[in-house]
Image (cartoon, rainbow, N blue to C red; front, top):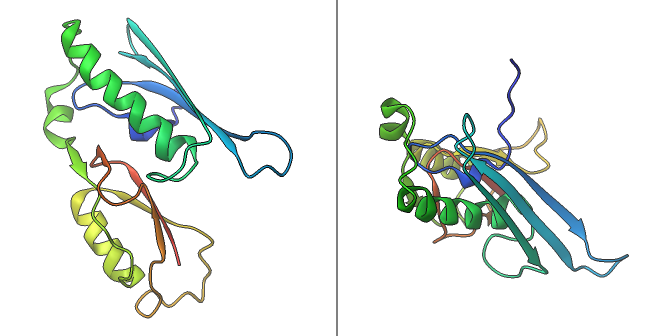
Length: 161
């Protein structure tokens, strides 16, 4: 069976969560956005559904659904599932996944930033990456989620240069 990881930033240690993120512009050329995350847990026997909708998010996490709405959904799941005593999944998964604070890698070379983030377990996505990009001499100007946000150590971190 084919599976895609959607809403990956909503992961909660020990639980299998299914979700989908969304981002849309609020009108034409308004530069305002609506972001969302819809998730269910546990995926093999859904007992909880969470819908997060954020209108014109600003600041931490940018404006993408995966960067700002999914972490909110994950936080909600992390508090609701244990409270409802929903059983956790595979114990090996629990040991590998943990909630960590995103470090600040701005002003570091892309190569250095990748090393720091991958050491933690993050998946790194470099926006508009080209083949001729010199990762040792090109510096990160922006990252999503922003530094200080707490996410799963298996989340994607987006870097701009």
